[in-house]
Image (cartoon, rainbow over all chains, first blue to last red; front, side):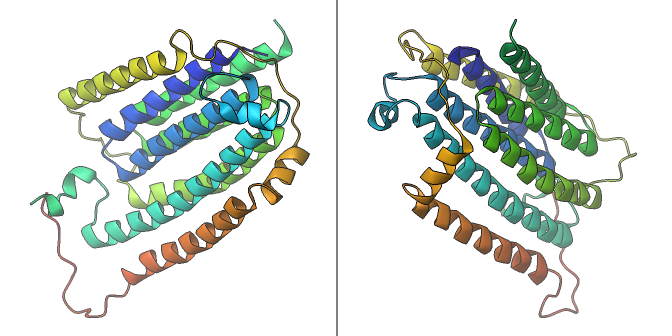
Length: 116
Length: 178
């Protein structure tokens, strides 16, 4: 079993790669992919912290529930995150279809109608 | 090196390489394949943390989402063999600088001295515990998620459908000027 900082490092790297993609890409689908990467990094963080750290400052949930079952709380949070991500992806993709029908492009630099 | 740490290194490398592919490559289809690789890596990391149920759910949900996303990508994007226009250099540098700044800040906050000083060993958890929690302490969140999914599904159908048949049809949809 690897120590917690290893997982947190992977999570930080994943999150920042996603952030880079979200800011830099121009296709809406690519931006959605980058956003999903950031969400995956967040859920990895939650599961790693609840599984591997007991009694850390700021993680009160561990002591309250008792070691051994704290990890299941993290997994529940991650499951809910996956559900929200699925709903968000469904809405986003249908919006992309509507935008594509309306404007014939999903390049964000061409979608500046509300720019004023 | 034990099996656990070997799995950690392999999965972590897969996750980061896949993320780099998902963001760095130009072809949207390669992006999606890289995203799939990254998610398999994250599922492997979940496995090393002992949350096997979560790993399986991650792969199941995202494989379904990925198949649909691929269809959309092929349908919506430019033809795959056209040359994409070059990326603007200042935008690449600006986003890279932003990402590195955020990474440094996160690193400092999460892994700075004094944070998570005491590490417990691995804890035993099973899918049974996750299910028990979902149906007792977190039953409200569980129900809300199912309502949210239904609402999102109906909303997605409505959003994609309305645009197809505009009420006042004859005038063509206005073209956007960039």
